[in-house]
Length: 335
Ligand code: ADP
Ligand code: MG
Image 1 (spheres, protein in one colour):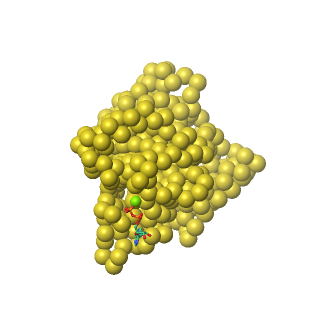
Image 2 (image 1 turned 45 degrees about the vertical axis):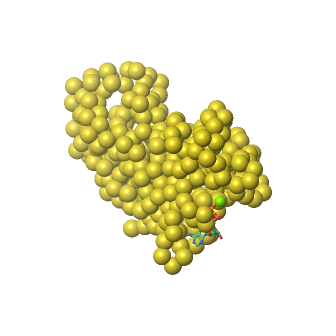
Image 3 (image 1 turned 90 degrees about the vertical axis):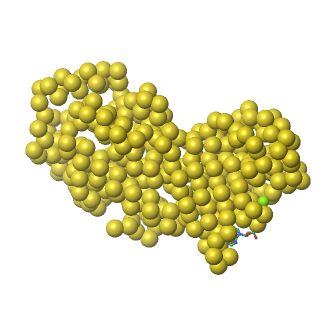
C-alpha cells in the first residue's frame, strides 16, 4: 500500500510552502521526485520551496536550457534538478539513465516525457490548474511501503497485544487522522496512511517496557502472556519497545514505517519528520484510549512513575511537548 493525497493551492505562496513541507517527509536520501504539469502549473515554484527548505542558498530556476542543475543542500547532499521539457523520449531516457546513480535527491520536471519511469523510491507529483487561478497538487508516495490493516491485526494477535494497548493505539490513530486532515487543509504535506498505520503499531511491543505498578487499572495479564512476551521479545534484547518495534517492522519489510515509530517515546531519538512529530505528539495527547491535554497526560505520567511528584526530567519533557504543539499547530491543535 502507499499514500496518495490531493491538496488545493490557493496562491503561489501556498505552492511554495507546500513544496517546503515536502522536505519534512523524506525517508530515503536517494528518492526521485517526478513532477508533471503543463507550462505554468507551478512545478518550479513548488521546487523552489522544496530547495529552500533543504537549505539550498539562492534561487533555483527552471533548467529548461541547461537540462540539469545541481545545488548543495544542508543534510541531503547534492540536489539534482532535471527538466525534460525540450527532450525527445529517447534523449530524456538517456539523460535520466546517466543520473540513476546520483547520490542525493533527484527532481525530474516533465517526467511524463519518460516512456519508462526510473525505478527505486519515487514520489509522484502532478500539478494542475484549479478554479479562480489557483492550483491543485496530487501526490503518490512510492518510497515507503505500508502494511495493510489486516497485517496490523495479525501482528497484534501474534504478539498477544493486550486489549488496552490496542485501544490506546487505535485512539492515537484516530487523533493522527484529525491532525493529518488539518495539515492537508492548510496545504502542508503529510502522509495520512503511513501515519495511521504507524500509530496503529507504535506500541506493538509495549510489553517490553512494562513496569510493575505503572499500568492503569483493570489490566489483566496472565502468566502465559508473560511467557509469550518473553519469546517475542527475545530477538530484541537490550532494545526499548520503540526501537524493538522499528526493528520488527524493518524485518517485516517496512523500514520506513519503523522510522516513523522509532522516536515516539520520551527518552529516545528526537522526532524530525512531520509524521514522526505528529505520532509523538498524538501519543502524548492520548491517555489510555481518551484524548486529553498535555497537562493531563503528564500529570498521569507523574502519578504512575514518580508518585505524583514532577521530576526535573518530566518537566523538561512537558515543556518540549508544549513547544512542539505550538510548532505543529500555531493556532492551537484541532479538536
Ligand atoms: P512551471 O514550472 O510548472 O512551468 P512555475 O512554477 O514557473 O510553473 O509557475 C508559473 C506561474 O504560476 C508563476 O507565476 C507562479 O507564481 C504561479 N503559481 C504557482 N502556483 C500558483 C497557485 N497555487 N495559484 C496561482 N498562481 C500560482
Ligand atoms: Mg518550470
